[in-house]
Length: 63
Image (cartoon, rainbow, N blue to C red; front, side, top):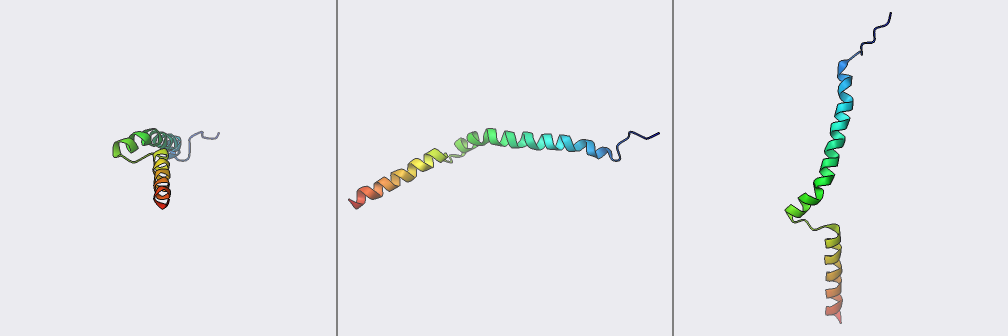
């Protein structure tokens, strides 16, 4: 008769570790906008707008 006991019970922790890692990544992504706003880091759209404004100012000075 075979035993149905796992060779190492620590293998039961693997799915929990995967779940914890996925939850951590999801939380990090969800809070990234909040952290950027609190820290004052401009968004990608804001950086693009600033870059276009600098280009426009350079063109205006060249004319």
